[in-house]
Image (cartoon, rainbow, N blue to C red):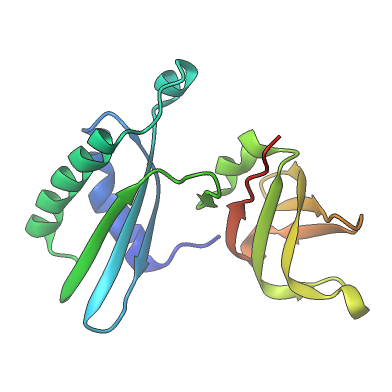
Length: 166
């Protein structure tokens, strides 16, 4: 889950503005699309607010949009026009850092890998399964058919939670 240099630059610029709105920055996506790029910012309730069952509101999203727009206008890190989206990460939340997965042990995640894992007919670049183990170098996922994959964190291109109604 290596972030691009552009996303790292944008995150550094955006993070203080998000913190000023009393919410946590979950992650940033930047999708250059020719004439109009997309900047997507995910925000999360602060840990103490989550403990009190508070969630991100539309008012939080509006406040972050206002703050970040001002900061981006000053720093001007994006060439050309762009669309700014601010939202919560949602039920099928993307993960931007391994430590974000810690609270989701035992839950189903979807991974898109840089290099395929497995061998023979079970070789794949996309893996969906229960997150069984996570450390600073790799994670382990067990698929619905019982296959276990130990995957290096630096081999993960994208990761997200798969919401399952319990």
